[in-house]
Amino acid sequence: VASASLAASPSLSTSDKTVSPETMSPQQMLAEITSLRRKYDELVSFSVNLTAERDILNNTLEQTKRDLNREMAARAALENAGVGVGGRGGKSAAGGGKKGGVSIMLVLIIAMAAALGGIKLANSGAADFLESVPVLGDALDFVDEDRSSGGIAKEEL
Image (tube, rainbow, N blue to C red; front, top):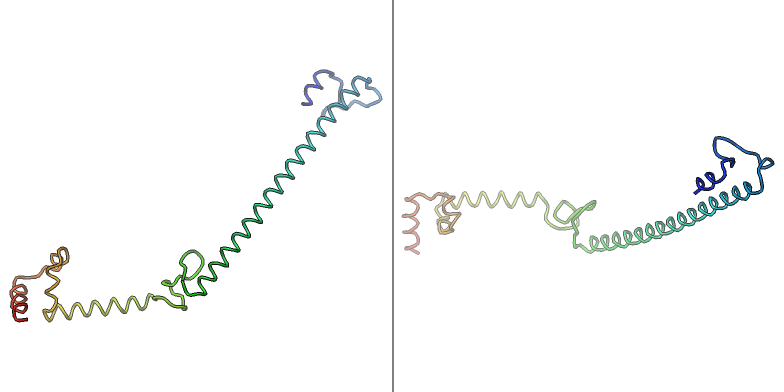
């Protein structure tokens, strides 16, 4: 913008040389004033745009903070009610909170009891009914002796 007025009158002030107002002609002064007025208007326009953008960002930030506070309050209310919402930052109902739910220790105890019960049933021959389960029967690899004794046990019942 300023380069057009500088090209029109080469004796105007620039950053590398300064011309005093006393040595300027009225036409050069008018061109310099016009150039400065244009620069000032651009600066004011830029400042107004920055202020508007700042206001928009501040309003967006405040709205986001309000939404976050609302979500945190709702989450706290659900956790206090015992629903146990899992996720980031908080204790979930299955993850070790003391407000209820299933702890890891309880899951391990139940798994161990089920394994010991399965071993006991297999040793006593009472687990032959698992032979009829399509994938599980093949995986357990029942021997023919167990099948014949299991058949007798089924007939006796």
